[in-house]
Image (cartoon, rainbow, N blue to C red):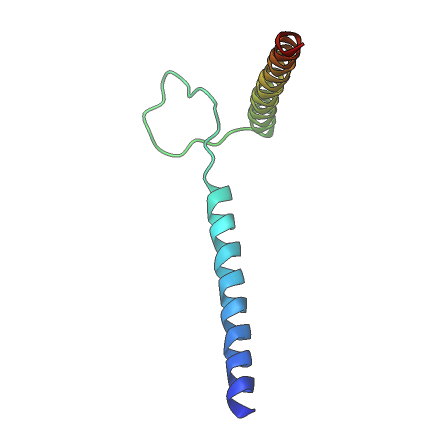
Length: 96
């Protein structure tokens, strides 16, 4: 019984640590996003501070780009479904 309880405690501890590692990995992936903004012509490196309006604009552009991509994927799916339906109808005609 003692061995089973120790194994249970160790497994529980391992699960907690693995969950923490997974959360840390997800947070690390979220961090690095460059703003798709144009720097001024006189930009020579160094830190650049963007206004809240520019940051909101960049976020809006990123959302629009993501929506366009999802819309294109949806269009491809509907086109594939339509083509598959046509092929099935043709096979049914040939079989009849």
